[in-house]
Amino acid sequence: MKTIRYLAGILMLLTGVMHLLPMFKVPKDPNALPMLAFAIAYLATGIFLVLNKNFARIMGIVFPLIGLAVGFLVVGLKNWDTMLTKMFLIDAVVVICCIVLLMNRNKV
Image: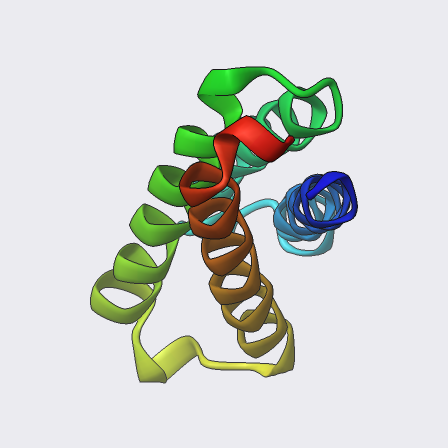
């Protein structure tokens, strides 16, 4: 379970950094500010997962699911790119990892 927790934490940190990139690439992008908010949430969640905080497992499910929903509904197919695909895949893996961690919380 420790390996799964570290995997989820590292992936959240990676995705947090990926969410920061649009702020530097295209600062005038209307999606840059919301992505900054997600970057902060993802980085915090990643740190809390690595530090083994209990609430981080819930955060590791909630924030990626919100990110997936916002990505599909707000950003949509008009702004779809490779980086968004990678973030979606990472979000899905993190959600699965955190569900496994919650189901086996006495083994962590």
